[in-house]
Image (cartoon, rainbow, N blue to C red; front, side, top):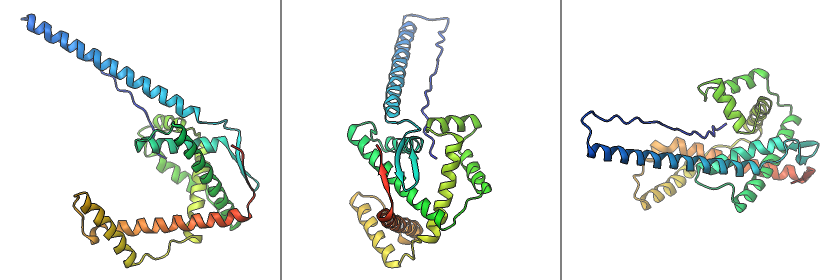
Length: 255
């Protein structure tokens, strides 16, 4: 889970004038006061913009109990949608994009529904094949999530900000573990050939040269390229798997 936290830092500076003060010192004090006033005004404007953005983000959420889609006999609720929405909005903001524009909002909505439907289909298939998740596995993963935060209070605040509670988070963790188990066994990426690695490296090197960047040797980046190609192949296989499952599934989108 990514931390999406908005922090407002305010400071108060004291101006101490020497006893031998004069006109020049008085001017400096006035200039300092003006600078502080401008800084305070800027902070207030930033806070106002952040509050307005947060209102726009929250306006895209839907009723937590509303059914947004039904996949076979499984209902996908607004709480699931809102959680995925908060994550998508945060990622877009980190990339410098505005998730509140009309075009972006429609795109995000479609992507979230597609993602939730696909995930549900894969989890249903995992259940059919008997994949299970233990409470110990969930707690272990939950501890890893909590380690990202300095205090329990920070963790709870971030959890609330993301539109989730503990029950939703634990359910998501269980689903993630089960999905990973299923993917590793049922949708292996397969071996990545040296030819594929070389081709990807050549493309990377060409892009680097065109922008004047120094390109590291193949041996140095080979593990990262191999991992990236495995992930790409796995995503492609998963997409095909979802499309196959859709052919026999009953899917009803309600938003």
